[in-house]
Image 1 (cartoon, one colour):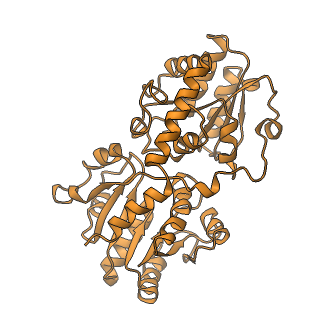
Image 2 (cartoon, rainbow, N blue to C red):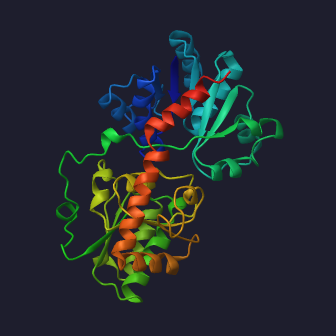
Image 3 (tube, rainbow, N blue to C red):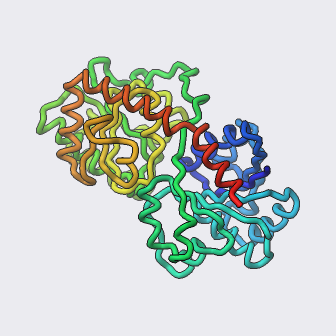
Length: 366
């Protein structure tokens, strides 16, 4: 069976990491995989490193007329059994190309996030007749996305949890987070991995840090925030840090290609998101036995049960986020308990091997 994966991603995030985690596991199941995407992107580079066949899109953007035509030619040349669409713009390109040229190849679309446009054109492409299945990353995404689907197409929604490929979990480079970011040995490290986008609500994270330092008097703490900067939000984030006088308590590390290697060096992993499908970094923390404190955004409660394998609070509730961090840091037994339970849950539900096997069932569905 041959699958053509399509992505318009230029930057790097959980969606792209999931593709790279997933494709080797699909290959083990006998699937031949080819990726069609933007040339010279981080995804392109990673595919070359992993020896995954990659076809470069025309222009430096996927959603161009040249690529509607190019997709027709690719499909006729490589004859995939199925097309797997990984981004919204890949769905657009497939829909238009199919309308123009009748590709005669079914597609599945992966829906990762909670948000979706309610415009007529968006609803048309999400409900397009030749999209065989919409693969939702969590039950929360499925529930949220149901309002976008017509009644006839709601049965197309299926949940497959993402998973982590175990082959990338070892710190072969011997990276030391304290040395690399000049964090003193006496500091407790709380970590966060999130690109600087609105859905991650890093402002709540910084306000939680402020509450920890200036109201709960936890001075021996340092927040290491890893994630790609943005022209819009990063200056606002830096401004809030300066306003709250937290410069000595936080490092903004920008994108780091080996962020997973830092996770087991965090005392806690913290998420402050206001919208989430179900982020890969939580699974990575589970694998590294790093306990998690988070908001209850989107699908996160499907992985974390409050006071069983982590602590949850309401979205934007920086005070309770801070209190949960403080409470867990003071209880070593609870930290270990959460870490062990999450580690067990990871192998039950959130490996790339399990994700690939579940996807294969969808690929083979008649």
